[in-house]
Length: 289
Image 1 (tube, rainbow, N blue to C red):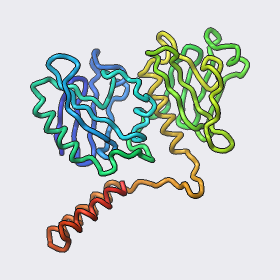
Image 2 (image 1 turned 45 degrees about the vertical axis):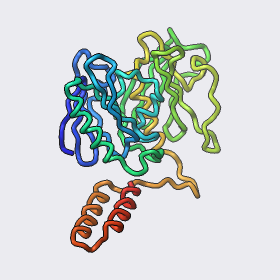
Image 3 (image 1 turned 90 degrees about the horizontal axis):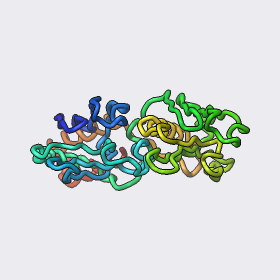
Image 4 (image 1 turned 90 degrees about the vertical axis):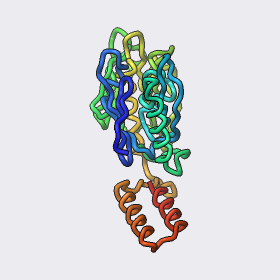
């Protein structure tokens, strides 16, 4: 597409295979956006695109929704983000509605045939480690390979003090459970992998579980704890063991697919491929992504 659409709090730059979202750093910009800075979203990572009225008078929203399993941040959030902090929403002044409608149509045409299916590999990068934040009962940190919890004597339960500070290699984890600090019971809990490779049972309430840290007023804020949860989730998926009969499909190189489609187009233009053959082979290549 090669164009730019400026909205409130962010600007979307459209490329041939992805959109680069650049977030503003203004005082009114949600802190999560400021932490993210920018995000590149491949079109193949999107499931749907709509243009809808905004929450405030005089605005419209270009609303995109990622495919399940495409974005670790979206998966970790699990629907708990407020609309104002949703990085897949671009709020536009009403006078740009026609322009927004044009880009919504362009994005829909760029969706891949399997847009409704779950992704086996993350297509959007999580915030890069190292990451850390203060919870109510301890400090959580992630260096890219190990998640560490260091307990605070003022907040940690006796069960956590008895267990001692904790370190969890990514290879031993099966997932992450993040509950927003903006709702009751906010916490981050690590799901450990059992001997059979399946997630172990949850170890009691978060305040008693040495594999969890609990949030509280001013602790585990969304813009601090969610990026760490997403980064761990991405690392866990990358480290998932490959078992016989369940080998995960690896995505083809998008640049290679684009080049092969370009070559098909040349053959089609030269009359060496029929319309039906060109459409069929192009769909096969897109399915490899």
